[in-house]
Length: 198
Image 1 (cartoon, rainbow, N blue to C red):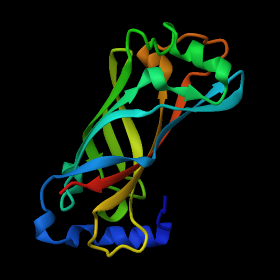
Image 2 (cartoon, one colour):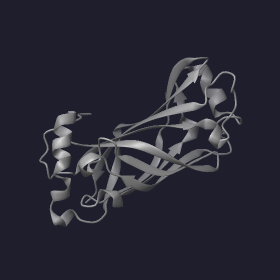
Image 3 (tube, helix red, strand yellow):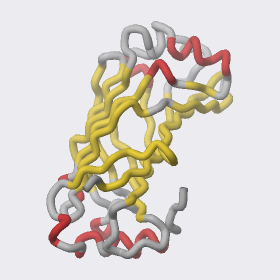
Image 4 (cartoon, rainbow, N blue to C red):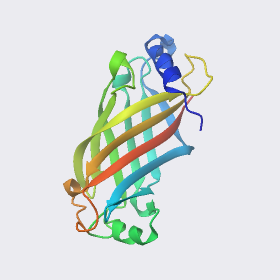
C-alpha cells in the first residue's frame, strides 16, 4: 500500500473543504481487504506481544465537505483473532478474557469526529465512538489520520487510507482473566484502505 508523506498529506488535506459540490453529503465507501488490518498489542509477563483481528463488516460514510458529519460502523471477528505467540490465543479467546463463544464479535460505531489543527483529519484529529466488547459498551477515542492515494489529484478522493490508533483498558469490558500475566492496557493500530462507491 502506498502512503503519502506527512508533508504531502497535509498539503492535500488543506484542499478537502474546496472539493467540488457534487461530492457534498455522505458518500459510501467500501473497505478493501488488501492493505487493511486491525492490529493490537498487549504485555504478557512484561513483554509486548501483538496480534490481529479481521474485520467482518464495515459501513463507512464520509462527508467530504463536512468531515465531522462522517460516520463509520465496524464489526470485528473475535473467533478469528490471532497472536504471534500461538500459546496465548486460546487463553485470549477463553471465557475469562474475550469469551469468543458467547461474544463472537466486537462492534465499533462512531459518535463524533473532532478535526485537528486547521480543520484537518490529522494533527490531533479524533474519531470518538462506542466500542462493544463482551456485551459491554464503553466510549473510546481514536487518533485519526486520512491519506489520499500517492500521486492522485487533490480533488480525487475516490481511494483513501485511514490510520486509527488508541488504547483500552480490558477490565472496563470484563476481560479480566490472567491478570497476573497480562497487563491492563491493550493498544490498537488500525490501517484501512477504502474506495468510494459509485
